[in-house]
Length: 423
Ligand SMILES: [Zn+2]
Image (cartoon, rainbow, N blue to C red; front, side, top):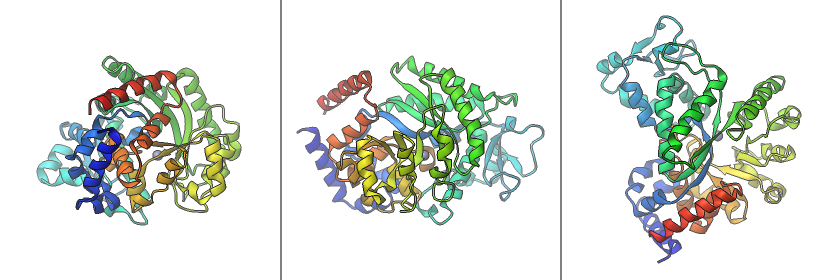
């Protein structure tokens, strides 16, 4: 039996079972059962190409990140209502505070002793699910980044966390990852704030360690800032991006702007400053179902060849053809789109049509720590189960992530042949 027949048969078993409803409408809740299926095992073993859309601040194993925090006597938790820039159930290593620990923060071991349910409450506060979707989903989503930042920016945790992330990604079958990152204030055990460039140095050090076992595994960074900032502040950011791209060639590759698209400034507002950017631009655009959101069109006008999401392209039929001609890469993130409320029924995700229409689609996980999903396997499986794709379609999406690199394509093809032979 070839791979198409095998996978299609296994898919049919799942879709004929009582899992069907959850697979379509709440994939995250279907996962515990899906992980026991033969199709999940098949997708786990599959070579994966590169992960093209992931935010480093929200791409790790949430259970492991919290185990680091829970096991450290110097971690504090904020137990007061949101105030002074702190979030309820925010975590912080004490080195994060410059000076005495402020009021409202309790040593985590003490707080856990007083509340046996605290671990579960913290896990719920740093992950997101279908029940969280309402008009405030984006503020709630962004609050999670704050709850984590004084944990994963603590250098000793960062090193452990991302050594594990890169290793697990390679084990999951990825050849590498393109991480969006916002240069956040990293700090060391003595409270010293790291210089901005040290963030990249640290990522490269961790990558080198992991390459001792997985020599092909490559980490690239896309330096990001927030959508919604005044346009006149962007040139400074672009200048810093230029510095990074020149200092770390092949590692820092581009500039992007992040945040909820439907409430901030659109790309048209930034067109003038981005037009003359001294670095390549890769941009979040079309993470929306709003027919008035024209960010994908603006992105193509700017000559951008790769966009985060591109979901609402279907609203602009002439732009679909243009995207095809320009070979515009759409970094599609199915489970993120469902868990942020854009696509309640995964079967209606427009990327199914984009793939069948021959557009340059890659499949990605966006923020797997927050969604408690795998680095890429769960999103690939969601696409296969809900979009009536063939395994050849899935393979093409994975090949798209290699951007025509002959060496990577040769490596991937040999991995894929071994995978098929092992079935
Ligand atoms: Zn994103």
